[in-house]
Length: 336
Image (cartoon, one colour):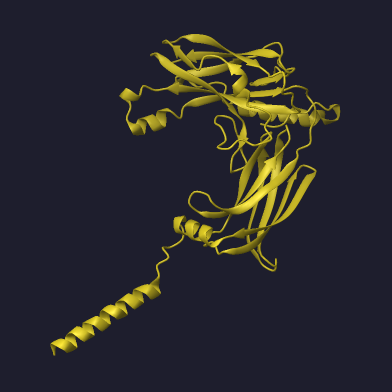
């Protein structure tokens, strides 16, 4: 999803943004017949842009709005659906996710939209039934905010666990559809505010990486984000590792750990320096940060990295072999 702009000078950018949003959310609004059910938003008169396939609302603090979904059972049997709301966040790949929650929410987030949405969390549809489901969103009166808050309304089929194996449950329960929700108090153009929170030794999929924690502190999407990161030794005479990525995006009030791979190498304790550049359109940011990798962290991650061969102490094995050999020689001499 991209940020929504209402500056008359940025009309063309606004059109592009809406087009991208429509592509994303429009693609998840309906299910094909093989999916078993479909989801369609019923947009209200308060919809900011009626041409898009998601909820786009501008509400005053304390104001309420009904969010209506049309759910249709296209199967020949009764189905159960769950409905949940999730705050949009940025994943480790620099992609905005709407159908689940971040492990740790960003500390700049004003509040969770899910806390202010009421409605049935479970719906039952009989064979071929179409039903309208209403959720009530009421913004808090005492928490005005700038920019936009973004979330996803996830509709997922609930399977009967008694008739499914563990393997089939893992497959069936992945079927879900996400309807976008963008809410503001006042439609205004905000510039992204990025910060580098930290850099540290880390692991991604059991592989050693350095993680640079990048934060979007503002209530706007960061679009077409490009990051160029390099890790140097302490005196910055040698570049050890680097990573470049482009076309990324950050959700409002979110952060993510940008990974810089060690390419299968082990962590070595010591002091390192990170140089990181980020840009989005004409906006640019740059940071230089020194950090330390301690001995215990290195040993722990190196043992867990699946690409690093087992670090056997060969000198210890040789010593044990020599001791055994010496004992054998002594025993043989005594027998003689």
